[in-house]
Structures are given as C-alpha cells and as structure tokens.
Length: 357
Image (tube, rainbow, N blue to C red; front, side, top):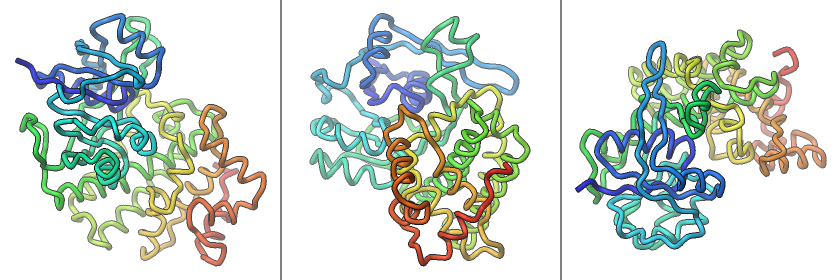
C-alpha cells in the first residue's frame, strides 16, 4: 500500500516541487491550501501536469491527487505517514496547532528556526527541517496552461532533510544537522539572497519573470557580483567548504537564467519586510561580507532596490511604502533591517545608484 503524504501549501514548493518528487517515489499526494479557487479546481479533478525542465524542453509528468482540503476543513492528520509544511514562515505559525497529532512534519520553510516555533506551538516534537534546493513555479508559460491550467514548472531539484523519526525513501537525502547546515547556509546566502536581489532589480525595470531580469546585462552583472561577494564571505567565515561553495555558485548562475522556468518576480520578491529583516538573507549577507577585500557594493544595491518594491496585493510591500512616506530611508533601514543610523552600512546602502540600472 502506498504511503500517504499531506502537503500544506499547494504553491510553488508544495505542488510544483514536492508533490512530483514524492509521487514518483510511490507516495499518495494530498494538499491543504487557503486559496479557495485553487482548492475547488483541485477537488474537481484527480491529477495535474508537472513540467520538469530538461536541457531544451520540458519533461511532462501526470501527478495524481489523492485528497484536497481547504485550510478551514477538519483533517485527520494522524492518518498521513508524513506531513510537509510549505505555506511561508509567518503563515506556518498560524497553522501550527494543526500539526499536534501528526506522525511527523517536515518544515520546508525558508526559516531555519521554523521547526523550533512549530514544535513549541503544536507540542509535537517530531518536526524537522527540510531544504528544497530548487527553483520552481506555481504557474507555467501560456502554451502549457492552455493544455492544463494547473500546470507547474520545476527543475529536477534536490530535497535535503534533517534525519529524524520518520520513514521516507532513502532516495531523498537525510542528513545530520552539521551536514544539513552546510546545505542550508549555501541556499540561504548563495541562492536566496541573490535571488531576492534579482527580483527587486527586475521589478524596477518592469520584468515579469526571473529569467528575463537575469538576461538584462546590468542586472546580471550586479547579481553575479553579489554571488561572488557572498561566496567569498562564506569561505572566509568557514561557514561552507570552499569547493562546495564554488560549485554551488556556478550552479546558481545557470539556474537564474533558465528560460524554461518562468519563475515570477512577484513570487520571489514578496514579503520584502521579512526578506529585509536583520536575521534574513540580504542583510545577513551584507554583514557576512564586510570582511571581504572590497565593500559589498552589489548586495548594498540590492538592499536599496528592495526598499522600492511595491505590489498592492502584498501587505508587506504596502506597509513598507507607508513607512517610507513617513520616515527617511535611513530610519526605515534602522527599523526593518537593524542597520542603525550611525552604522556606516546605512549610508553605504542608500548612496548606491539604482537609477542607472
């Protein structure tokens, strides 16, 4: 009998990456989501198409759906062998009580401390951290959506999990915390930070997808520059082995420019206040690289670009722009990023020229 997996979050990571990966390893896939329209679409059918990027075209996979729930419905979570959480770090805390009776939960949130918060709220100790090392999308090019409006696009990708008291195929990497930390640091710094910088720069030039922004020569130079700054900082700090970091950097450059991925800038740039937080990707990278031979100019450009992000459907970006209307940007950096007015980094970021990009 196939083992059952329940995925909270039927978006890019959940439906785009995790479901195809687990389905091809023999698991029955069920979803929980807050989007009523998406839930209704999923409930009316028993499959959707996943398009996995190849070298020149897509490899199509039919992903069968077992059960679908709206977040408000009652769910017998204990009947599932394993539960994955990928709804967003902030949102995960609001649903943590639902994990109380789960046999095991994997938090695939971009927050290393998410298992700690989920354990504390749910009182369930069997909650572990997962690193989905992938670029994936909850949508697809128009020509694919015409065939199936629920089509997702993803790389092959790699899933790396914290070892724990759960049964999952050994084909998926399960590591001790020391080795998991190396993967997480590489992803947080070499992938997440430049990915966000790319999105904010792409927004400024009105691009829709990540690969379009990466094809812009000026943006590409800044993004690769930020990767180089970060990689140098990681190696100096001995956070990631030199060879691992350099291979990871090379991989990221090709991923960002993959024209088959159709990763929306709107998805990558969302929640700018969280992403500009003092303990999050961009500002941590800025701190990490202060000991480099040259100042981290490219990351600083990313910080300034992020301040300008606006999407009326994104509550955080709306709040960010309201802050900027009421305070000078130097104080916004202090309030959001923890970069104090007297910190030289404050002026350094704000003195960067983003108009010429």
